[in-house]
Length: 170
Image (cartoon, rainbow, N blue to C red; front, side, top):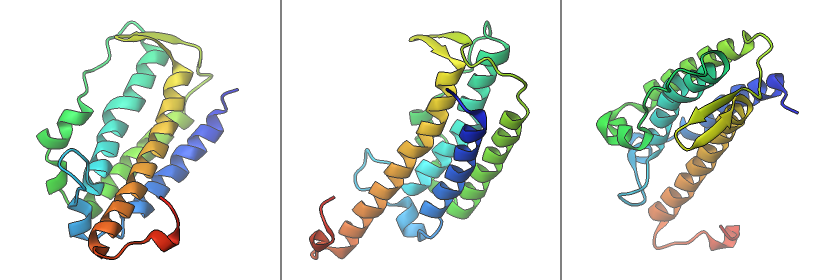
């Protein structure tokens, strides 16, 4: 059963966890990518910021309150280059994400008896409000994992020719 207070708590804590995962990165590390198709830590943070303000909260609000309204278009992958995420400053980007997350938390706390089974006809099929909330919380976890993987890749890159195998298998 969906527990809104638990979801809010997870989003609140995960926002701080995400910030902690990236905040100590040097400017070089924040912009570093293991390969041209991967994202940097800075790109992840700015993706989270844009998703926070243009995707999850907006689309959940539409599902709950205006299910016949079309979702605004988003382009999370395209925005990375179009909006020049990797040229931004890490500290400013983290603060923008955290401020937007706080707006989301305030909005979620203000919901009155949300109907989690409310359905929206998305381009790929039906999605319920509860599915969107679950995806929002899961999205944080996916990007926390991505940040940890970027830290690992950066470590192994910077330590070459030495290897961290003694620490255990990745």
